[in-house]
Length: 97
Image 1 (tube, one colour):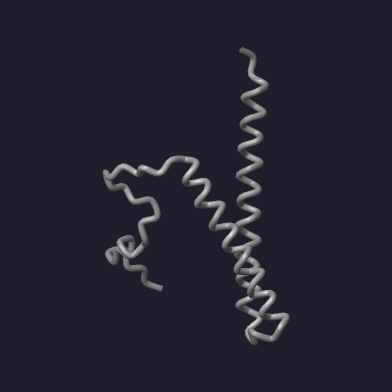
Image 2 (image 1 turned 120 degrees about the vertical axis):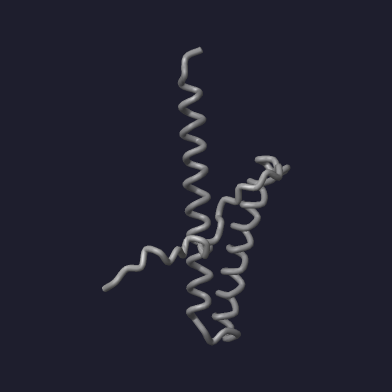
Protein backbone atom coordinates (compact mmCIF):
# COMPACT_ATOMS: atom_id res chain seq x y z
CA UNK A 1 0.00 0.00 0.00
CA UNK A 2 1.44 3.30 -1.09
CA UNK A 3 0.95 6.31 1.16
CA UNK A 4 1.05 9.70 -0.50
CA UNK A 5 2.44 12.22 1.98
CA UNK A 6 2.21 15.04 -0.54
CA UNK A 7 -1.60 14.96 -0.60
CA UNK A 8 -2.47 17.24 2.28
CA UNK A 9 -6.07 16.68 3.42
CA UNK A 10 -5.70 18.79 6.54
CA UNK A 11 -7.43 21.71 4.84
CA UNK A 12 -10.59 19.59 4.55
CA UNK A 13 -10.87 19.17 8.32
CA UNK A 14 -13.42 21.64 9.75
CA UNK A 15 -12.06 24.31 12.06
CA UNK A 16 -13.51 23.44 15.45
CA UNK A 17 -11.79 26.28 17.26
CA UNK A 18 -11.68 29.24 14.88
CA UNK A 19 -8.89 31.64 15.69
CA UNK A 20 -10.15 34.90 14.32
CA UNK A 21 -9.45 38.16 16.07
CA UNK A 22 -13.12 38.98 16.68
CA UNK A 23 -14.05 39.23 20.33
CA UNK A 24 -16.73 36.86 21.48
CA UNK A 25 -19.08 38.95 23.59
CA UNK A 26 -21.01 36.07 25.13
CA UNK A 27 -20.62 35.72 28.86
CA UNK A 28 -20.06 32.44 30.66
CA UNK A 29 -23.63 32.45 31.98
CA UNK A 30 -25.02 32.96 28.45
CA UNK A 31 -22.88 30.13 27.14
CA UNK A 32 -24.01 27.89 30.00
CA UNK A 33 -27.66 28.77 29.45
CA UNK A 34 -27.36 28.11 25.71
CA UNK A 35 -25.75 24.74 26.33
CA UNK A 36 -28.37 23.72 28.86
CA UNK A 37 -31.15 24.76 26.51
CA UNK A 38 -29.60 22.60 23.77
CA UNK A 39 -29.51 19.63 26.14
CA UNK A 40 -33.13 20.31 27.06
CA UNK A 41 -34.07 20.52 23.38
CA UNK A 42 -32.45 17.13 22.74
CA UNK A 43 -34.39 15.64 25.66
CA UNK A 44 -37.68 17.06 24.38
CA UNK A 45 -36.97 15.85 20.84
CA UNK A 46 -36.22 12.37 22.14
CA UNK A 47 -39.40 12.31 24.20
CA UNK A 48 -41.44 13.51 21.22
CA UNK A 49 -39.99 10.82 18.94
CA UNK A 50 -40.63 8.15 21.59
CA UNK A 51 -44.26 9.23 21.82
CA UNK A 52 -44.58 9.15 18.03
CA UNK A 53 -43.08 5.65 17.95
CA UNK A 54 -45.54 4.44 20.58
CA UNK A 55 -48.53 5.87 18.71
CA UNK A 56 -47.31 4.52 15.36
CA UNK A 57 -46.42 7.87 13.84
CA UNK A 58 -42.85 6.78 13.06
CA UNK A 59 -42.03 3.53 11.33
CA UNK A 60 -38.24 3.94 11.62
CA UNK A 61 -37.14 2.96 15.12
CA UNK A 62 -33.51 3.78 14.31
CA UNK A 63 -34.30 7.48 14.27
CA UNK A 64 -35.79 7.21 17.75
CA UNK A 65 -32.84 5.25 19.12
CA UNK A 66 -30.33 7.74 17.69
CA UNK A 67 -32.22 10.71 19.15
CA UNK A 68 -32.45 8.96 22.52
CA UNK A 69 -28.73 8.20 22.53
CA UNK A 70 -27.88 11.80 21.62
CA UNK A 71 -30.04 13.07 24.47
CA UNK A 72 -28.56 10.57 26.91
CA UNK A 73 -24.98 11.41 25.96
CA UNK A 74 -25.65 15.15 26.23
CA UNK A 75 -27.20 14.68 29.67
CA UNK A 76 -24.33 12.48 30.89
CA UNK A 77 -21.81 15.03 29.62
CA UNK A 78 -23.68 17.82 31.42
CA UNK A 79 -23.73 15.79 34.64
CA UNK A 80 -19.99 15.14 34.39
CA UNK A 81 -19.30 18.85 33.89
CA UNK A 82 -21.44 19.65 36.93
CA UNK A 83 -19.50 17.07 38.96
CA UNK A 84 -16.18 18.61 37.91
CA UNK A 85 -17.42 22.08 38.89
CA UNK A 86 -18.51 20.78 42.28
CA UNK A 87 -15.17 19.04 42.80
CA UNK A 88 -13.33 22.25 41.95
CA UNK A 89 -15.57 24.27 44.27
CA UNK A 90 -15.03 21.82 47.13
CA UNK A 91 -11.29 21.87 46.54
CA UNK A 92 -11.25 25.66 46.68
CA UNK A 93 -13.32 25.64 49.87
CA UNK A 94 -10.81 23.27 51.51
CA UNK A 95 -7.91 25.64 50.87
CA UNK A 96 -6.61 27.42 53.95
CA UNK A 97 -6.75 31.19 53.89
